[in-house]
Length: 144
Image (cartoon, rainbow, N blue to C red; front, side):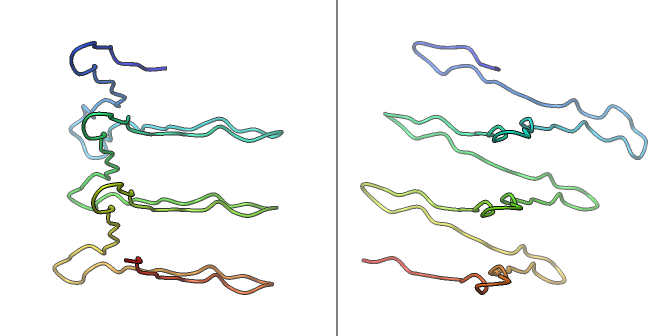
């Protein structure tokens, strides 16, 4: 457990988990990796990973940024993938913007990157099925 300090009248402290910068100046000097992994289990479920910002009852809730670093040669890639299953349904992946009780709901944007030669592509594919057909793609606008 890593916990920052508590404050009764101001902001609480910051908790950081970071690897050190690479000190070497030669090619191939990489900074350290950071792994956040739960243990495996052969007889029950493996552990969950939960990353969440706190709620606020009087102001805005905290934001969450999942950002991959830039590089002079190549930018880092981002892959979000639900788990596979050998004997039951595979895991679901869900991207949902927040609801609002008083004004506008949040928006979701999926966009390919810009490039001086060619822009990045956006591909949406339904999965294949061997016995009962492939998956569906459904795009529905909101009701007013």
